[in-house]
Image (cartoon, rainbow, N blue to C red; front, top):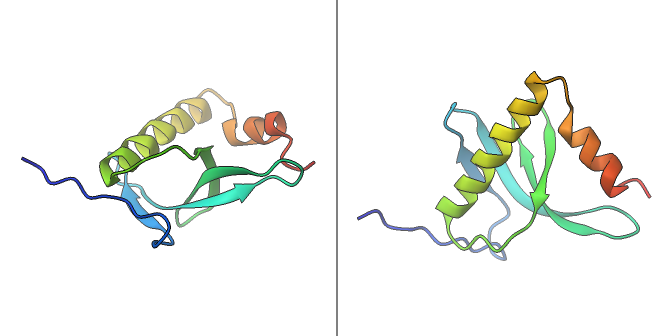
Length: 97
């Protein structure tokens, strides 16, 4: 049986998560937006900072791993289709209001 590792977001600044394609992300929570700040996952790799999905109650590291894996899979699919999903999300959320 695999031991589940609990997340303690209040006491931890960031978590390192590696995806199935071996990409490593530093994951943290930040408030994003000016007029209506929203708590979002922020994923950083060696190249850039990504605004991830809204924060959900991930209680264990494997739940965060699944969140990052699903987000990264979607991100890669959209990139191959010629869509910059992070730019679209930024426009939809009016993060620059």
